[in-house]
Image (tube, rainbow, N blue to C red; front, side, top):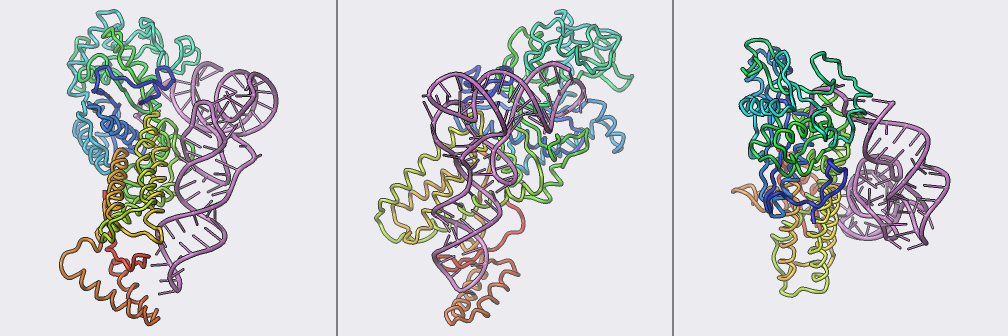
Length: 484
RNA sequence: GGCGGCAUAGCCAAGUGGUAAGGCAGAGGACUGCAAAUCCUUUAUUCCUCGGUUCAAAUCCGAGUGCCGCCUCCA
């Protein structure tokens, strides 16, 4: 049974969708003003795994996200880059879509853009004014926090708490300093026409208007970073529930931040790594794997050193997959299995339920990865037994293991493709290498290590790695380009 | 100042009442001419400190210490 941690109650709750079999989820996207950084990617990967797991469990998932393409920062950046705000927003929205492809993140079913949903936003603001939840003054429209009884229920604070420690600059127009803008006046020629004059939508209204438009007044999951809990999501709840009179979201999920030396990575602080610069140093899958080794709600400390460790650890999984493929491409030597085969089969079968149990517990990817490591440990022990030989029975068991391993890895968005090697080749290369290896073997038989090593070293230089294993000498063409 | 979170081996990290997953690094061994890879064994009497509840606590309660996040744009 799936349980998810809901920020609304700070508790793990049983997951039940509004409509059986269908999950409607909305994840706050980013302001498209620059290239994405690792923090954005963590969030995207996290909700990608959540989506994949829900689909794996048989749900249909409608996954919606957004691009905030209207705000001051975009205008400013556009001036710096010498293009229009719309062009700049497009540029970085497309860059983000490219980035998520690199990380094997499935694209949302739709990315809603603020600039394309102004009518809905204006309609929503008008209704909030009619219902006396909002007021217009001097071209701005504010939401009145005092009019919404439950204000503060998500972030767990009361209006009194917040006023006591408020650091918000006093705005004379507001009835309460905590009132927030639904519509903001801007200079002529820069905004959209509205009943209150020319302006822009406030920051929070977009997500409410667009998510409800696409997913209905009440939907299942709303996700984003912890740093959005207040004020962004708190305000979304207020304006959405005031507008519809219905519960806005069943489960609020929040992912932890990516930190650098303990401090939150953020654009405004300038302490961030863009996903593009990190991709120059490490394969995307290593970064993805690393980010999934920590539970999504906890902060994770980022460093290249940690990525190196993650790479070693991930290689353990990749090696096993590779070895397994080699074993399975060998010849079957006998038709009977034995007791060990039986034991192996049983251990293997437990892995699926262990894996599900981990993800059922609030999407615990760290534990799920632990299960994958246990799993490859079993496979390694089995295929490395000194008396191991392929028979009809264990062939099908191993084939099943291979499928199961790939199936589970895919839920985490990890792919393990078999690298090119002696199994796949076109033309002359293979016979030539086999010939060289035969010569090398002769040299080895005569204890002529010098010559044997010379062949191995020279082959390595041209990109062919030779290894002597218990199954004999193997070789593969070492890929320099990364695989996804 | 207000609200919230976290503290587990050298490092990273699971684990919310039943006696400490997993990874990285380290040590010993097997295999190997050497490499590489792999396998086996091993590394926390103990989970920040102090007190309490319980037959039983890393897990619950109280106090303290330290770190972090939010309260302003933020994934």
